[in-house]
Length: 269
Image 1 (cartoon, rainbow, N blue to C red):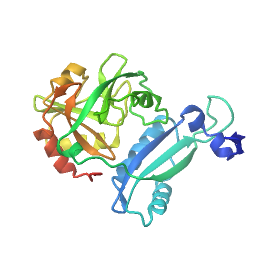
Image 2: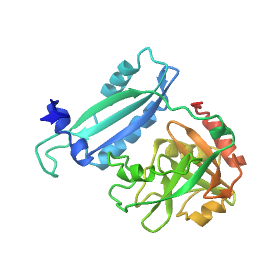
Image 3: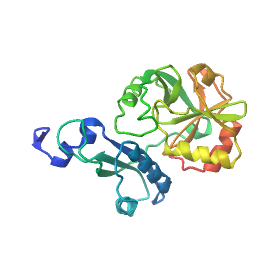
């Protein structure tokens, strides 16, 4: 086996994650020497692994390896990848065991205005394929997001993508919420999209704050007419949206401000 002309590691070359996207991953923030929401991240990792029929490694093992990778480091992005163990050629898997890959990467930096004044978002022409068996899972096949991340408008910080019906599902790297009639609305993600850790955390937070939440389809017109929009993920926390597809929005709006204050997520400025 050769990689760029040189002999390569057998396990890497045979990885089902490389060949088929057969695996899951989490992207986590290392902040002030600790991984933010580590328990929640591992909960979601185990849920997604189970969705693909993968046996997640013991949690104690993952926690020990993460701690070793983060030792004496204050800031970084931790990416944890689980791939189904190689078991010969072909789509049919031989077993449910996993290999794991753990990386520490530099944190991205964003202008403070992304949190304070909000971001501009556009509607991508790329659509997500419907596959209910994979809906919600952060699996390794991210080609749709790669395509949607090309050719952005120069002043945009995020792009929204639709499903096959033309309904807006999420951002290229974020989950999506809008405010309409005093309640939070977010796509149910039953056909496609990712149920991100930060989305789950915000839903729990909204319940504690007694904010009504509705899971419903959202089209581009409803987004343009929304009282507020925000996007979220594990690195940025919450970004208010101040403009979508040319429509100006209040950012941050009052409900978004309440959630941002309660979340108290680090800002990578």
